[in-house]
Amino acid sequence: MGGLASALVLAKKGFKEINVYQNASNLGFVGAGIQLAPNMGCKKMPTIKFYFGCTVTEIGSFQPRVAFTIQKRDGSTEHIGTDVLLAADGVKSITRSALLAQIYYVSEVEDTSHAAYRGSVRSDIGLVISIQSRTIYNMSSIQPDANFASAPSMTYTTKGSKDAMVIVFSDFFPDGGVCKWKLRVQKPLPTWVHGAVALVGDACYPTLPHLNQGASQAIEDAAVPAEVLSRSPTSDLASINKSLRVYELVRKERASLLVQWAADDKKFAEANAGGKTVPYKWASPDVQEYIYSHDCMKEASENCFSLHDGLS
Ligand SMILES: Cc1cc2nc3c(=O)[nH]c(=O)nc-3n(C[C@H](O)[C@H](O)[C@H](O)COP(=O)(O)OP(=O)(O)OC[C@H]3O[C@@H](n4cnc5c(N)ncnc54)[C@H](O)[C@@H]3O)c2cc1C
Image (tube, rainbow, N blue to C red; front, side):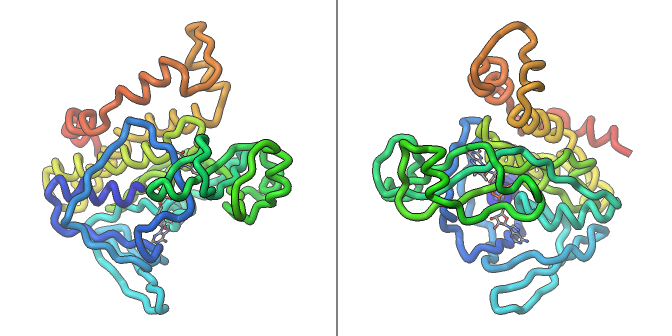
């Protein structure tokens, strides 16, 4: 999500050599439909090269030039060099681990006590999301989690029990198997940037789905590096690093707040201390205003130079 959007915005800004390394074998759907809130959007651009079936296995260098290793499906490896690496490698990001190791920081997973069932159905049940020309529908649910709680870092997804799901949702019956996902958040990271490498989206802050902001925030993240890098005064490492730190400055507070709001009722109550009572966070006019009135590219372009100059 964030990787594709980053590539599209960079291409739109006129960057010429944009390579997307993707461990999946193509851009097909992976059994999951999601709801997108209307604070996002992107256009397809033609000047991007895709490398499918390529798993990034190691970040060899963060500066002065970024170097990383990819492993292809046939087992062969290749070493890649690049000026900038935007790592949108998701909740299980190996780039996050490598980046944090550079600053001797150990990230911690927080148990959310929530898991989700996901599966596909072939009917026209109205509560699920169409993902293939209305012939396949994706469904997901949120329910209290018991299975993952003892070891929240170990696994993200496991085969769910349809019988157990039927007990929880006794009035809803999907076709075929169901998949059970652990819903996970990360303690906030001290930084998203090291050298010429920046994390994007779930790699920095996996979020709970209660505000439908995971994908939207990944796409907002993706929009900003192109905006700030295109205004970088020079193309040397110091300037690129500052531009990426400007990206972090523009994005981190907002993304972190939305992660908190999605996860934490207490924080939400504090945010609504004006006395308004709303049943769900997303139904709050204040939360909706905060989410939907924001223009991350405008903020980045307006503040880019002053933020850049303020960094040492
Ligand atoms: C059950 C569930 C329901 C959700 N529902 C919603 C919803 O309704 N609305 C919403 O907005 N969000 C939802 N989300 C969250 C949303 O899916 C994520 O926030 C969003 O996809 C994050 O985008 P991303 O680009 O950061 O990461 P991802 O979309 O996870 O993309 C990461 C990509 O990196 C690739 N990758 C990973 N490691 C490597 C590697 N080493 N080398 C190469 N490629 C690699 C992966 O194949 C993947 O394509 C849901 C999440 C879950 C688990």
